[in-house]
Length: 136
Image 1 (spheres, one colour):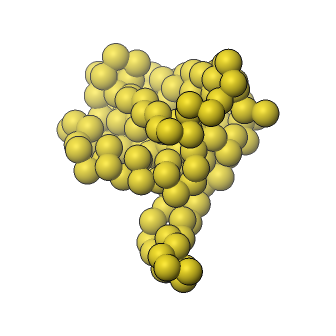
Image 2 (cartoon, helix red, strand yellow):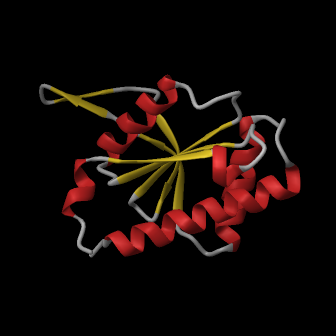
């Protein structure tokens, strides 16, 4: 059973992986470079994840084909979007909240590598209604 404690541990480890990458590479690269590095770093840390997971949308009993793809879906509970942008834009927030809903993920994380410090200004965590059902 998924717990708040386990989810916090996973989130901590994912942010730690991003910090490790950022320390080594710094800001200024393309999002795709950071994405590849995150996949490698999570694998090294033996953290289970799916990448570029496709999310179909159901509407009135049909499945609508979409191009919605979550960068990383970690341990079947944490949706992660990787960015290399000047700021975390409202559209990015809407995107992660949508992905969390479609994946039924209790928590989401935007990691923006185009910053000075990942911990203080390069990451933002989101929760939704699924989070309420987690045990302590």
